[in-house]
Image 1 (cartoon, rainbow, N blue to C red):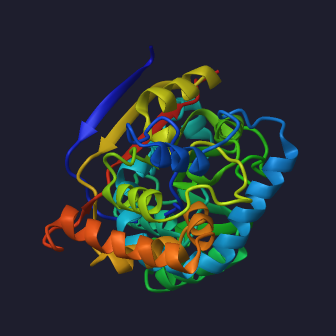
Image 2 (spheres, one colour):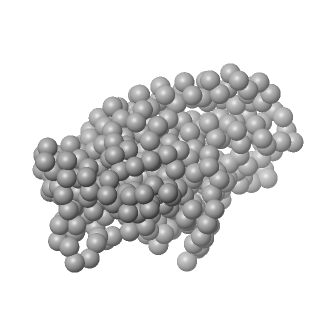
Length: 364
């Protein structure tokens, strides 16, 4: 196979998208309730979601509704954690020095980056820093950065962040153009062969059809361009999600009615699965890098973890909102106890490893 798996035990913090919990395959053994919760938080259609327009609409409506209200909570709660993947995301997507042919490099002066599910704009902010710190032989090179998201409040937040950043940087800012587009990752609103690099930081977890996003990425990438995306490792290793899953299973109702069907939340944290999907689409030089040293440093206790998951996620929020008053109290109490047990009373941060998978579109 034309791919490889790499393990990284250290990461450099830098800067975006995540919501809930799910898993069919990563269930906790010998516990029917936990298996039931895993199934509810994943998909009840065994992962076959293609062509199911009704489920697609309900799932996308849920995502849009929860992100329009939860954008600030996500920014503050998950931001310090999800930023830690960005240096690897950009590097593996070939930014700011994409893999282009010699003829194409001589013929043009613009490098195009697309940030899918841009959220608060952390990836774009980090991309600007990367451009500013990179010396280019041709000072006329223009970097055109585009943020794509379905959520107007996220786009407004990202635009404000980027405008503030560019206003404070004068040296190379004139060589950077940034714009924002409201649109779907499953139908990227750009023509073929547009971008040199595409990145998606935890956004793939929130698409009804993640494979369609990757096929769309292949379409709009220029030959030689690369896509890079991040996803959480399974809950047996992501301690924040494991605490929540166990607490809901033990103290609450795993079978909340009305939760839209969707893909397995942890599918793309599986290196074999994520690399195989890219290979089937036609990508080359496929690589999966696990960032095993990621820590959720800003979460101080179980109550804070509960509040972040309630207010700054989508699927997990729906599960938590579906509990009774007594069930909610039981879940909160269990999360407090489990957080203290896992972190030795808050003496260490939660471990939250993630996987960054990348691939390159072949040259013609």
